[in-house]
Length: 232
Image 1 (cartoon, rainbow, N blue to C red):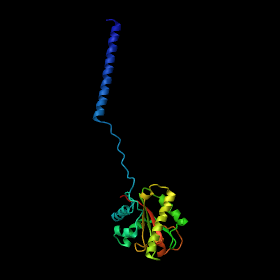
Image 2: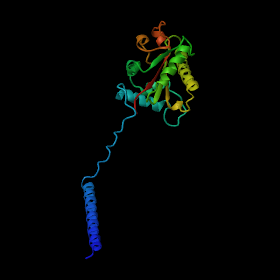
Image 3: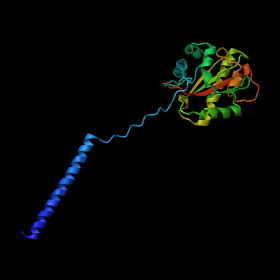
Image 4: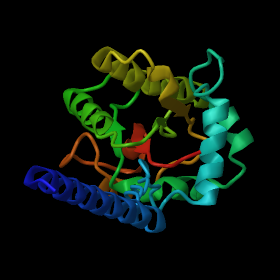
């Protein structure tokens, strides 16, 4: 046999061996992938975008839900806010218990003070309203709870309380330019006959006139404001 034929045969055998070895390696690799598939990346745990504050008790949320439903924050109703008679209908609790519901908002909210018989915001009030408004975090609703003291006639005080709530709301409208403000701001205007604040609110809460005299009448010539961090 010629040398060239022998070399050709040897080359063919070597090529066959190489191909066979390559195929065996690929088959074993595929077999390994099938029997031990690559683990998928672990799913990223969903994180809540809103954790409720400790004050969001069932009782608080029950009153809050009624306020939201009755005061025009949901649905297509055009009404803006609630009157004292509405409050008595949906908040069937005592004055003290009603005020106690909002006590945990001491660090979150503030009290806007007004002059006797007036509903005009001073510069300190305007500044504090915007500070609290801009500190929204992830809250959905902003509440304005206005009051009037027992000085003067009951009817006059009821109307004055309403005007004070509107003063805060109109300032927010003017400054925020938020087209959906009506679906975020809930207003309650309380007359002299419901849930008067005790004098200790002068010291416990941030108010718009720090360092100035404050008494039981003064703290009720006011509007309480705060975002509320509860899910409904």
